[in-house]
Image (cartoon, rainbow, N blue to C red; front, side):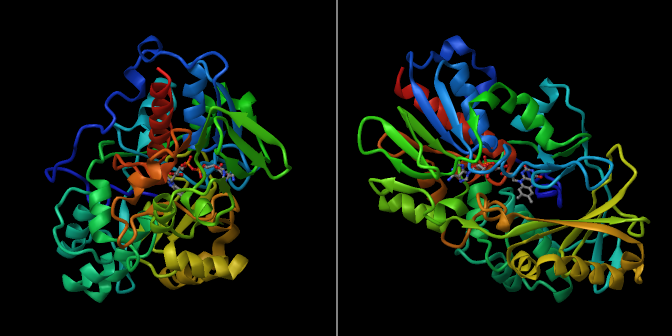
Length: 451
Ligand SMILES: Cc1cc2nc3c(=O)[nH]c(=O)nc-3n(C[C@H](O)[C@H](O)[C@H](O)COP(=O)(O)OP(=O)(O)OC[C@H]3O[C@@H](n4cnc5c(N)ncnc54)[C@H](O)[C@@H]3O)c2cc1C
C-alpha cells in the first residue's frame, strides 16, 4: 500500500485510541515477563514479519523455536528486488505507515535511514492531469475508512455508499485508488467494518520510505537472530493437535513436535485448506477464515529512459488507479514508475500475464502523448496472487466481516495460535507493524500460559 492514511491527512479529525496492547514489547524487560520452561518447543509456521518477530521474542525468552517456511526465502510479503534498477525496490511492503509505529521504532533504533514521504500527488480527472483535487464525498469516505469519522449506517460497499452520497463519475477513478489502498475494489470493501477495524489505529499519520528497503530492516533487525532456526522449502501440510504435543508435518513427510504452534500463513492460504488440522478447526474459526477478504494485488515496475510524468504519483487512472515515481528519494538514477493495482483490476491484469505491461503502457501513452512506449526500457510484474504461499495482497474488511478478525486471532485448545496481519485487531491490519504486533501478541499469550 502506498499512502493509506495520507490521502487526506489526519489532523483535527482526531485520532487515536491508546494501544490496544500497551504492555507489548519495547518497554518490557525480559525479567518482568519471565521465561519459557526448559525444553519448551514452539513451531512457527511462516517466516514473514509476524513469524520472524514472534520467533525472535520466543527465543529471547528461552523457547526452542523452529520456523517452517514454505517458500525458498524469508520475508513473505516483504521482499526486495536488487537487479531491476540501480537501487533496491520493495516488491511488497514499501512504506512505514506512521511515525508512532513499531516499524518506525525499529528503524530508528537500528539507525536505518527513512525519510518522510512528502511527494506531490497529481490527479487524473476527466482525462486531464490536475495538481489539486477536492471532493467532499471522497473526504468523507476516507475519514470513515481511516476510522476518524463515525459511520452509523448499515453495512454496504464503499461504492454503494459513494453512490448514495452522489459521487460524480469523474471521482470514480480516485475512489478505486482509495479502495485499492485498502486492498480491494470499491464494490467489495465494507464501509462499516473498515471503519470499525480502523478506529484503533495508533501508528500516527506520517508515511516514510526507506533509503534502502523494508526487507533490509526486517532482515537485519528481526530475522538475523532467528535465521538459523528457519527451515526453508518446508510447507506445512498438516497440524495434529489431538494429543498433548502438537505435530506439524511438512510436504516432504518430515514431522516436527512441539508444545505450541503459531500459524502466520496469510488468510488467503488458510482459505485453500492447504494446511489440514486434526482435529478439524472449530466451525467459528473456519467461518472467520472464509469471511475475511483477501484479493489479488500487484505492482508493475516500469523503467523508462525519460521522466515524462513529473509528479511523484498520479491517481485516478483506469488500468492502474495509481502510478508512483519509485525512484523518489532513493540513491539511484534509473527512472522507475510503479503501477499498483488491487482487487478486480488486479485479477484482470493477472489473467493477462506479461501483456499487463503493454496494457498499462497504453494507458500512460494516452495520458502522456505516447511518451511511455517511446521511452520504455524494461518492465517487471510482481503478482502477489500468483505467489503460491501468499495468494493475494493483504486482508481487507469485506461486507459482513463483523468481528471475524478477533475470532481468527483466538487460539485453539490453548496450543494452536494464529498471527499475521489479518489477525490484527488493533487497527493495524494490512501493515507490517500489524503483522509484527500480532506475532508479539501470540508470543505473550504463550508465555503467560506457562507462567
Ligand atoms: C503489494 C503490497 C504492498 C504492501 N505495502 C505495504 C506498505 O507499504 N506498508 C506496510 O506496512 N504494509 C504493506 N503491505 C502489507 C505487508 O506486506 C503485510 O501486512 C505483512 O508483510 C504481512 O506479514 P505476515 O507475516 O502477516 O504474512 P506473510 O508476509 O504473508 O508471511 C507468511 C509466511 O508464511 C509462509 N507460509 C504460507 N503457507 C505456509 C505453509 N503452509 N507452511 C509454511 N509456511 C507457509 C509464506 O511463504 C510467508 O513467508 C503490502 C503488501 C503487498 C502485497
